[in-house]
Image 1: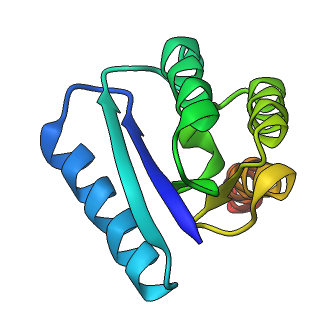
Image 2: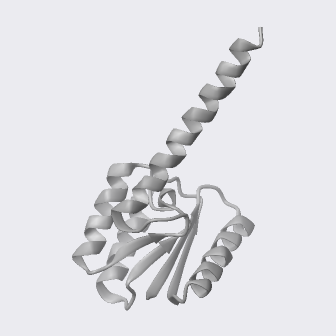
Image 3: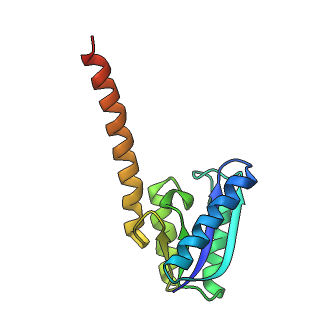
Length: 134
């Protein structure tokens, strides 16, 4: 499968961005993917990412790749509706999203749901343990 790597960090940290790109390249190599391009952006929030997403859609129209490879769905967007709209647009061009953390296309959203559920569960557990220790 041919993939276009998309890496994003919400702050200006070149080292973190380079590490994310390197992890994605290693994942691609391990899974037999051919990397055709790399897009790396920093200083862009996962809630305010429309310009870079539009750029990826334009790449999907013209570039030779099957999927966009990301570490997890939040790299595309932290907003589930925006993520679904992005996947829908990619599918119009015969492309999808592959999440290193698991899932592809719409299934990649499940990763986001799992993170939310785990986060709430951990917070609730901490509150419960604190309340019971009195």
